[in-house]
Amino acid sequence: MTTERIDNVSITTRANVYFDGKCVSHGFTLADGSQQSVGVILPSTLTFTTGAPEVMEGVAGACEYRLAGADAWVKSGVGERFSVPGQPSFDIRVSGEPYCYICRFG
Amino acid sequence: MTTERIDNVSITTRANVYFDGKCVSHGFTLADGSQQSVGVILPSTLTFTTGAPEVMEGVAGACEYRLAGADAWVKSGVGERFSVPGQPSFDIRVSGEPYCYICRFG
Image (cartoon, rainbow over all chains, first blue to last red; front, side):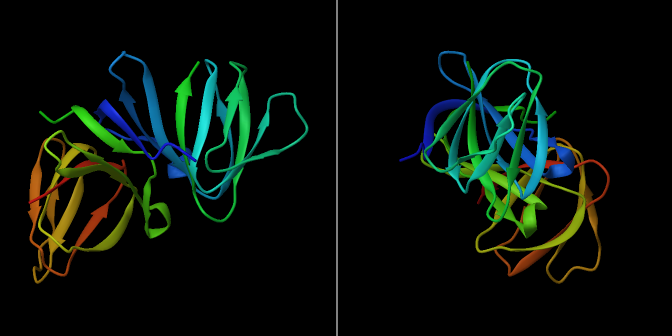
């Protein structure tokens, strides 16, 4: 089971476009003031720089991720979450269907 | 002036990916039940099939559009709106910076 809708948010209309459009997200703010985003990663292998810890939740498709310092790629699909420490970066790769996600801080 | 935020919406977490990712959007529902979306078009020339009339509002970048049956391309930028009749299709082209938009029906 995954999160199909998120209610009572204030959406930022301008998209965030990363890696020439291989990743696109839209940010929003919840009623309690916390910031999240919904996004999609197209088939590619990308390295994201992270400033703060994040939790990713898949809502469509699947990805593999590799945290900084790790050797192994770990698969994550719909309804699954993984935590990214506030380390310098992590790798993510997608093949086939685009990976849609929710990104939460903390 | 353009619409930077839209409050009190219910966002659909799964992205809509069109044309191999040249256009990505996220849909949301307003408190009154009406459906809208925010999206981005990367540099490209695309033909969209339209089922119902739509109003597009630019929130970043610029595009040129050409309605079905028209010869001329018309430029539209930040804070500008254009209406697309419920005709079979319209053309849109973007060069340079991605074009971010709000799409409303009606």
